[in-house]
Length: 109
Image (cartoon, rainbow, N blue to C red; front, side, top):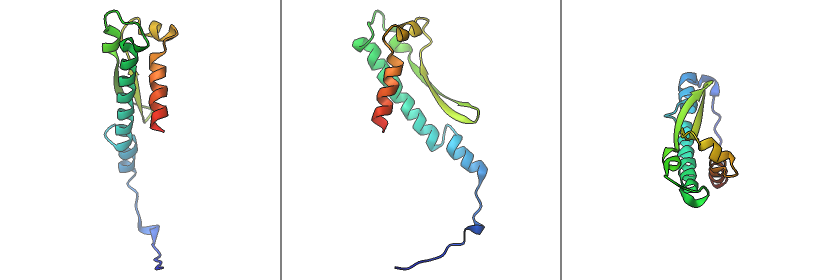
């Protein structure tokens, strides 16, 4: 076995580059969060396509979307709907967003 000592005292970390890598929506962390958001959105749409929630017009289903945002220097993913009755449907024993998130997180492990 050959062993080599490496002098780490000359290594300089680019803090700005590390921040972009870890906290940028375009970096690998942001792209992973974006992928999870897309998965949660798809699962929520499946659940609201008459699989968990009764469908009248399909408006709730088609309104579910995702977005990445930065809050306090951290990347966050948001999935939801802007339909007025979305929260009522979610809270009326049909928690489609919560169920979608749990399913995706369980599968991601």
